[in-house]
Length: 337
Image (cartoon, rainbow, N blue to C red; front, top):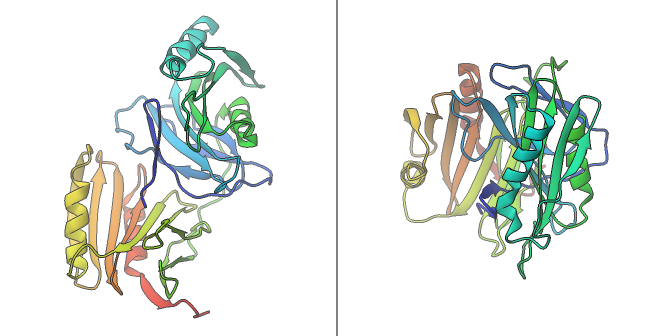
C-alpha cells in the first residue's frame, strides 16, 4: 500500500486528503534560526514531513502539503523548503531557472518560461512544465517556484494534473506567505478515536490519538491490504497499515520483519528501544537524533498491523503521547456502533 510518485528527482509519498473550499487557515512552520513561516493552508490539506527527515544542522526546513481527490482533476502534492536567506531579483531568476532545468528535457515546453509571483510581502518567480511522455500518470505537470519574503526564502515544487484548481491554491499560498510570529491555539489534549476498517470489512482497528484529524481507510486494488494516514493538532503524523501476514508468528515476529526491512533505508537511527509482548510489540527510535518515532505491531485474523507515529523535532512529551496511542490499540466488529 506504500505508493510512490516520481517526477524528475522528486520522490513523494501520496496520502489521501480531500480539498475543501473553506477559508484557508494560517499554519505556522518552524524555520531554524529564523521567524516561523506562515502559510494560508486550505482546509483539508495535510501537513506532512518530508520523506527524508530534516537534519538538525540543516539551514532550512522542508515540508509537504498534499490535497488529493481520488480519481479527480485537482490532486496536488506541494513540496517546499523555507530558509533564512535573501536574494536580489537577478539571483532569484538564476535560482529559478537552474532549479527548473531538470524538467525541461522531458517536458512539452522544452524551455523555462518564468512568470512573476508577487504578493504584499513576497516577490519571486515560477514555471510550469507538462510531462511529454505518453503516460504521465496522476501528475502530468510540475510547477517550480522560488519567492523572497522579507529576509527569508521559500522554494520548491508543486505536482499537479493539467488545469488543476489546486495549483492556483498552492500558488496563492506562496503569494501570501510571510515570516513572523503566529497566533495559534494550543493543541488539543482530548483523545480522538481513530478508526481503520479491515480489508475484508469485518472488523475495525481503533486507537486513541489526541487532536487527530478525521481520516478514511484506503484499500489496495486487490482488496487484501488497507492504509490510513492522518495528522494531529500537535504535529504528530500517523500512518497505519493492515496487510496479509507474511508468515506465522506473533506481534514480535511482525516487528522483526518490518524492522529488518526499515533498517535498509538510508536513514540514521538512534535511541532504538523495543518493548511489549506477543500481543503488542512496540518499537521506538529517533531519526537524525531529533525525530522520535513509535511503531506498534499487532496480529489479527490473518493480518499484520503496523501503526507508525512520528513527530518531526519532537519532545519527550510527544514520545509519551505516541506510546500511549499505540498501547490503546484494540479491535471491534465492523457493525459495532
